[in-house]
Length: 129
Image 1 (cartoon, helix red, strand yellow):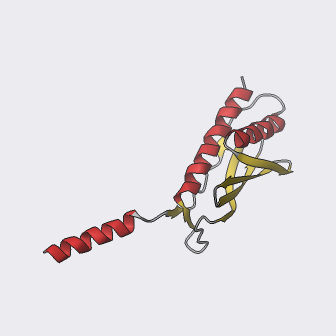
Image 2 (tube, helix red, strand yellow):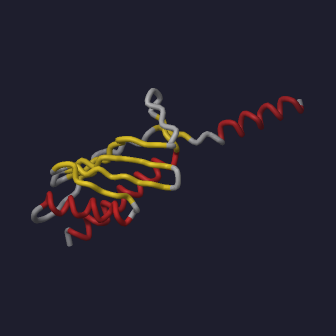
Image 3 (tube, one colour):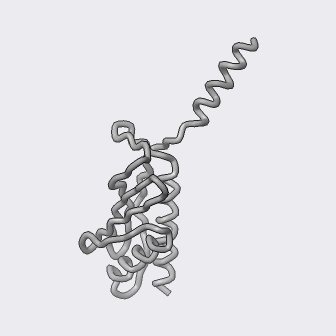
């Protein structure tokens, strides 16, 4: 009975220590912006990235490449946007245990991307006032 208990605790500790989650695939966020929408979206995304400690570089109209450096971790995403919506897509990472076959990554990735998405929505709402 004692052996069974130790096996149960060992398995529980093994699975609770997992640090990878499926890569968050952000749904397209619909937004409503007034005048000169593309420029408003661009500025809101860049402002949001900067506030969340991401660097942002416009690749082309409608696409911004964002990079986050956190200690030894590096995460890169592309924010694809139109005048009505935006999507955050995984681009690359280092030291994040990314497994392309399983589409899993360190759980912090999803937290960082969700925070970026929330900040973009905040910045868009401030720009639309």
